[in-house]
Length: 204
Length: 353
Image: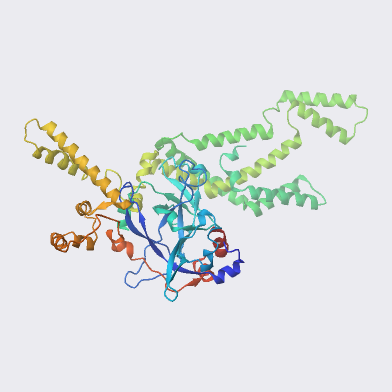
């Protein structure tokens, strides 16, 4: 975006970290009602009262709008992914000058701010929320479901991370690790579409 | 070779390659190379690479003889699958090996006689008869009559012995366990998938919650609402028609409720409809009491009829909010990438934002 050297970017850009975020979600099988829910991602954070914090939630991320194409490792455009970090970032003020040159999908949300001394209203860029996620890919070809249990298996993508805006998060995904006891790193995850998520989130 | 059936190839392809390479190198390095030398070298390399000693051979034979009838009896009597697959495979393997590798099936007495006659004929017809000529002619005749030369027989023999040793080593390490496992699957856990799936049920319930048809409570309240209450609302005369009408009206009301709540989420809701659905926030519910309405009438407070949805409308559960923790301080990308283990965060930032 700014076309700086990466080392310059690493030291010059400052972000706000957050280990959880609140967002509107649709409960499973009930598209007419919406609740607000917290999503957690795994961070080194201990609470004296609760002891063990909840495990990180896996999330559905909307990558493309294709509803028919399941081939490119997406479930109708959605990908179950593992959140690593939620953060918010306010772009620098100079970016307002270049706002017209930016492509449409990178358009900034701005708000007008009032200066008391000059009694003027000026545009300022708004804080934007993003998530760093590890996407998954199908274990089998074209994500064919298992012939015995009918679940689709996915594998964590190694050496790949994505920054996605918060708006692209569709909701919490319930994925179960296969052979969790073995504890291997490149383990297979099973996307559970049979669970009643509403009950699941209230229990856990 | 039927060693493929037993997975001997999978177990030690690298070992066989290693074995051949070492044997070739030894042959090249040696000044003299007789059959006895060859045999000793093969034994040595077998011992070093496959860890097979003569004592181990004997022990394997004994253990196999002891185990085989017992295991096969269990498989043959109790299992529902193919009977004694292992004996069949083993017999097939031995027969095929003899026929194919040694070529013994082809080499009969007639053919041997024929071979000798033709060899002597060739010797008399030939003008020169050196050792090289003899080798060439014998090879040619052997191939014509037996279908296989003696050199090829030797090669097959060594290869077969290696594979047999590999198979035996595999059997000693893995094969018996695999057979036991298959017996367990067939006999102890039953042989068919439905019975096997039962063994996963407890774990699956722990991981994913209760199964379908866990409770009959869903159908029983429906019986109350759709039948009992509907019947009580009738005048007990021609009640079926009246009950159906009652149910129809109830479903109509339900769908109306759903559409109203959906409209409320889009930002359109009347305060009266929201009151019906218990969707009001604390402030709004205070405003919508009868006393507040009375006071408002007194002050003639003009309020818009349609309100946008406020965030207070929805209640947070404690479980949902407990993980929220925001940092007040700003952190640089470098620190964040180090703390959370995100390599090339800067590159991601420049390309994807």
